[in-house]
Image (cartoon, rainbow, N blue to C red; front, side, top):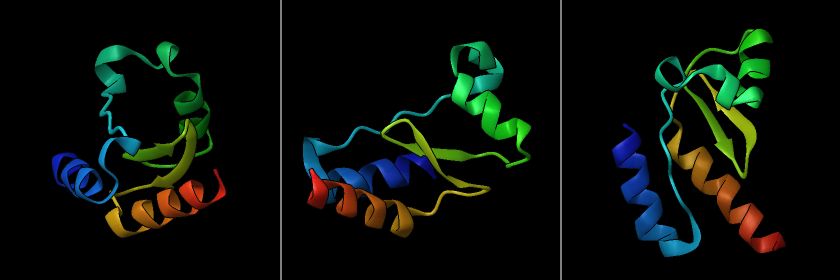
Length: 76
């Protein structure tokens, strides 16, 4: 699902976005303190961050991610 999202975002936004999948079980939560805080709040995996801010949890929501990115690009 991450590959699908990455491909769709690349098609729509080109090099303006970067998609990175991080398996915190392998890499450790110490490397991602924001993820640790979000998980402690009870949100489920997967967690989608945009510009380092948690936006979505519990699934990969491509249309919502696209909309959030569009809004960010309009304001920058």
